[in-house]
Image (cartoon, rainbow, N blue to C red; front, side, top):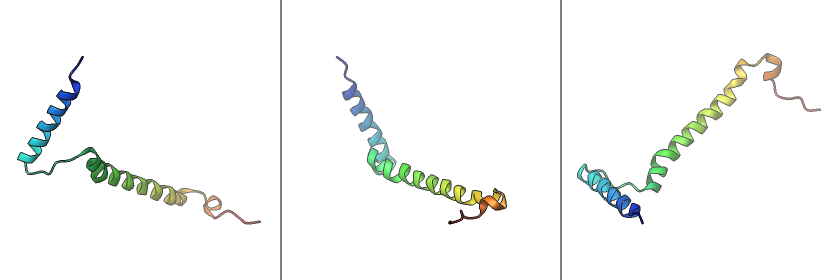
Length: 70
């Protein structure tokens, strides 16, 4: 049987010790998601929405108007 879990734990401890030496607080995967990935996803989603809304500028005049209500 392999000892992958033991090696992974040792690597994790080594990385956390290095972060402590550099004066950086320990970072858990959930913290990384909340502090890095989630804000990036929010900014990308906002950019996509801004692009979709501003795309009306390049549409022909009759297509840029709101849909008529019958």
